[in-house]
Image (cartoon, rainbow, N blue to C red; front, side):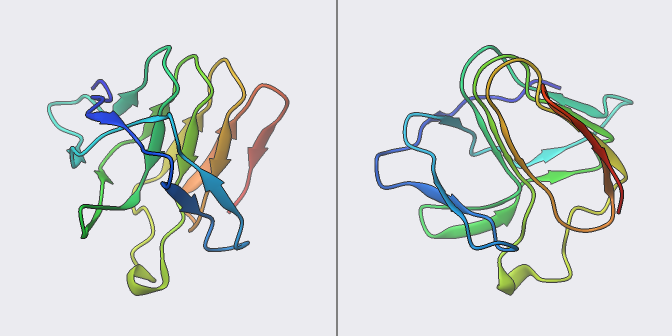
Length: 131
């Protein structure tokens, strides 16, 4: 399934790693307002060559939603991407629930994980595995 770009984040937009407290600007990155559910055997969510922000726990226009479910793989594609799978305190206990592999692809990517289901993360410099 393709990550559908709904528009770019504005200059005041950011995402926060709720584990470390690190804040990262999403200004200029493409985001998506879609809530994605894997279906029909298509269990990989794939990005493009653009700079995209895959944010699991995202609030848009005042409405919060957990944006991904059922995927076993996420491939950001080329571009300088952000993959944020941390959850805010209000969603504690609702970490991503399907065993999955995250691949940053080409580019300078930032990948943040939380929970025990994101077991393998592939980046340009290193591959991390664990719980």
